[in-house]
Length: 409
Image (cartoon, rainbow, N blue to C red; front, side, top):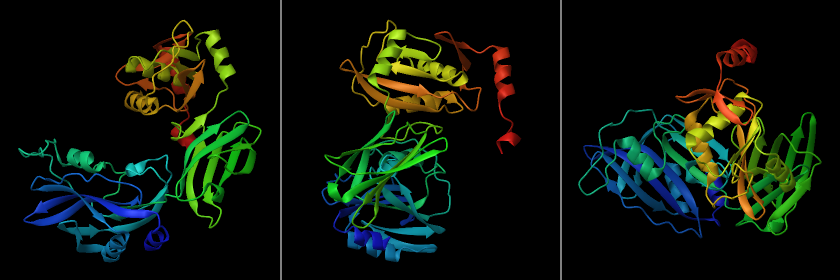
C-alpha cells in the first residue's frame, strides 16, 4: 500500500476519510471507515458531522504522508487506537485482505477509477435497531440506514467488508466505453495523468474456439481493432507503455448477466430499422418508454422463458420511432429487473440513435435456469406478440428440461 501511495504521489491530493463509530462512555469504537485519496485537482465539500451520542458519523482529511503514517500505525491483527480527525478511535482487526482490483465501471464504494481495495477486516457485530434521532439532526430508522446514507456502505451486506477500507485509485486513465460491433471493437478512453501516446489497450476476444489478440493505439481518445467477428467473451486491459502498469480494464461475456458499465453491443442501424419495420413478434417488443414496471418485467420474464428476445424502448405500438429523453435507463432497468425477476434474468442494454432519435435496446437471453417468475405474479411466456401466464403443461416442460443439480456439478 505504502509503495503504491508513494508511486502515485504526483496524482494524489488530500485523502478523504469517512467514518462511522459507536460511542460507549466516551470511547469510540470503529464500525466502518473508508479511506480514499482524491486526485490533486478534486475539490470535496466536507459533510457536517452527525453526532447522535451513541453513533457518530464524520469526515476528516489527511495528506498522503498522513495516510502513510496512519497505515504504519494500523495493526494487521489485534486492537489499537488511532486518531481520525477530532476523534480517537479504537480499531479491532481480524485480518488484512490484500488489494482486490476493481475497474472504473464497477463504481464500487463510490470510486469511479480503477483501484485496489485493502480491508482491515473487523469482527461482525450487531448494532442498534432503534431509531437514530436528535432534535437538531436528521432522523434515521437505525444505525444501518444512517451509515448507508452518510458513507454509502451497507454494513449488513456480507459482500461489503467491515472495518477499515483503504481504496487506492490510479488516476492515470480510464475506459469510458467499449463498443462491440459485428467485426470491430472500438475503445474510448479518458486520459488524466498519463498522456494519450503513452497508453495502449491490450485486447483478447473469443468466439467458440476462435481467439484473437490485438493492441489498440489511441488518437483523439478513441482506438479500434478489427477482429473479424463479434466475440462472445472479451477482455480489455488499459496499460501504460512506459512502465506496463495496469490503468483500467473491462471484461465481458455474453453468458453473464447485465452488461458491465461502459460496454455496449453495437447493432447496426439498418438491422434495427429492419426489425422495426417487421413489427412486434414473439421475440420483439416495442415500448415507448419504461411504462409500468410490472409490464416491462413481465415481457423480460416471458422472453427468458422462451427463446429470448429484444425490447426496443422509444418505439410505439405502430412501429413509429418516438425516441427517449436523456435518462439513465441502465440503472432504471437494472433496479426494475433485480426487484421483480426470480431468478435473475441475463440481458444486455445499449443505446442507439435512429432517425435522429435515441432508443434503448434491451436484449434478453433465453434463460438457462427456467422457469423464470415475475415476483408475486407467476411465470410468464410469450404467445405471438403478447405475454401471458404459463400453462401447467408449459411449466412442467420447463422443469423437465431443467438440468438436475447433480448434472450441473
